[in-house]
Amino acid sequence: MSRTIKFIVVIILTLISLYTIGSWSEQTVINYFVSIISKSINPTNSTILIADISNKSSQKLPENFKIGISTSAYQIEGAWDADGKTPSTWDTLIHSHPELISDGSNADVASDSYHLFKDDISAVNSIGLQFYRFSISWTRILPNGSAINQNGIDYYNKVIDECLANGIEPVVTMFHWDLPQWLQDLGGLPNEIFIDYFVAYADVLFKNFGHKVKRWITVNEPYNYCIISYGFGIWAPAIKSPGVGDYLCGHHLLIAHAKAYRLYREKYFKMFGGEVGITLESPYYIPKDSSVSDKDHQRALQYRLGWFANPLFGTGGYPHVMIDEINERSKVEGRPFSRLPQMSEEVKKLILGSADFLGMNYYTSSLILINKAERDPREEPSWFSDSGVKESADPTWKQAKTFWLYSVPDGLKSLLNWIKNEYNNPPVFITENGWSDEGQMIDDDRIDYVNSHLLAVAEAVNEDQCNVIAYTLWSLFDSFEWNSGYTLKYGFFHVNYSSPTKEKTPKKSVE
Ligand code: BGC
Image (cartoon, rainbow, N blue to C red; front, side, top):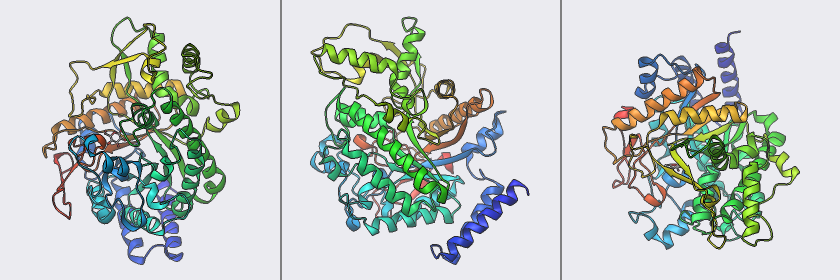
């Protein structure tokens, strides 16, 4: 039997069982059947972006390579207190400190995906993409840590069913930074109680949605979340504890992720056969001049990506440079133990290998210098002073509206190669890549950015045999951009925020 026929037989059997157990109506089954068949015949039918790379370049992406688009719950859903949902730390922070958001806005309504999710999926469908990565709002599902809120379950069932009915695979992130306020009240990520609550939450998600969701991402970007939320104290919950709180946050996130992964493998994998991974993020670091030796360069990448990737995909545990150096500094600071938490052999074993794929968000790269000057131990510690990394941009790189975002497609290729060499070529699922501008409908810079990055991916796959399996655009809509409010536009669709029905209009990139 050819692979296509096998694939169609499996689809038909799955549809019959969904229909028989009553979770799908006859019409949903028919819609799904029609769209999946048309997508399997022409998986990239209407995207100009993808057409560009496959028509104009000699580089082709492998046939089974998937392309999708991404959003996150807090940035699009709105309905911040609807149907039993309780506040996340972002709701709390923004309501009490609107001055922290550059345009004074909030995401109470956002693009109102809670009510208009069908528009979102129809937008994804209109550009012919194969999957939609979205995240689940924890406090819709577990408003106070104990009882499950059926309204939340119903809502995400509708979103998932709508994806499937349109032949779009739902790729679900469990935690994209909207931590329950009730959990922050117990200490949030720096408290190890986070682990048990996260695993209990993951269990609810696997149990309720596992028969329909086959690709799970536990956490989005532990590095940025921990450094900015619990280090700088700029993102919610705005706890300022650099060099201490951020390392604790990372430690508990890694353990929580690994326990959720093990839970899936033990309790759900046989039944559902899905995959669970995590999304990390890193620029590629390029030495700015010859003062950065090869050793310095490797050390810097270990601090950045290796902090999370080495425990999961590398040799196990934190990179040795981090363990040794932070331990030494902590002693000099007069501390009784290292600011970087210790991992027992048992915990190292739990974490190592606990991901079926490596999710990577890639936006930009940077030139680096290393500050090797002796640090005054009385100064406030931080990841930045521990690593000594000083980032800057090459003046020839094209800059987006976001201050740190430059177009460096070669950096993506180098990063994919570094991952391949360092971690034995794990499957890499690029979970975000995108460009911000002023919101113009003729978004030529976005088109260039995506095409050049897709080309870099194709080269990494074809020339260097990097095991990249998928690529995800960020973002479906111009959405709420954390502390920048609505001032930075990353969307492929414009949203009319002044209208109650939030009409979406495709920009040139996806017309
Ligand atoms: C985050 C998104 C954010 C994007 C652009 C990513 O790091 O996952 O939530 O909108 O960057 O800043």
